[in-house]
Length: 330
Image (cartoon, rainbow, N blue to C red):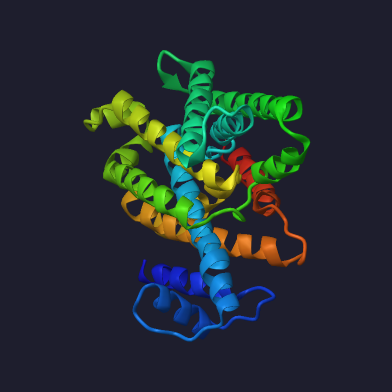
């Protein structure tokens, strides 16, 4: 934990220096301490602007989004007892994207609150459809959940495309499409100011039920025998992850596979106990997305790839490996 926390701090500082502006860690440190009122640094205005207004919010946004997606993936995989579950695969991200685009394009509201509200309604509606399609007598079957999630994700993607093509202004279409592919380019201090507390509360709720998640790993009947109110806890955790997903999508678009890859990678080191797994997966997810986003904005400079493209390129092979490992275990 201490090593990962230190790695996260170093990753934030190092990632801010990466780019054509040729910044050093010392410059980044001086700018940060100056804005926090700890020192009085004489840093050129342009470098100060690049660090404080452009790169630092983006890097912190990547950390927040990576941490949130990784935590959501870990919870969904345990609650649905499906190793392939994550917000993207189960249609929650696509539903949130549809809700957010509806708010943006149809003019149903303005500002971050309306955008998050639209994303939350979309995420919750999509997951309700998945559960209604896959569940039977309140029992979630893993295979049915994934199949229903894929179908709902495709439906939401199709509706999102329809809304954009039919309603959106041509000049807005390219920007919205880029955002839907996953991008942290628009993260600023305002977005971080309202998203970070919501994510902290959501993670605190998830961590509060770490023992219940351990019980869920043995099945719903076993969890009930251990004293867990299965129906209440399951829905509380799923609604919490839907809210977290909505917040994340509203600031970064739909970034897939982070919630799929990180929980599996971290379990190899921490084991299945969620009291250890959840804090570590949050830190690992933050570090992971910081560097993937740094690669996305610098590998093909001056062009920038949507970060969702790189996570998909990394996630699809991992998805195939999980499928093959599942075949060997059956």
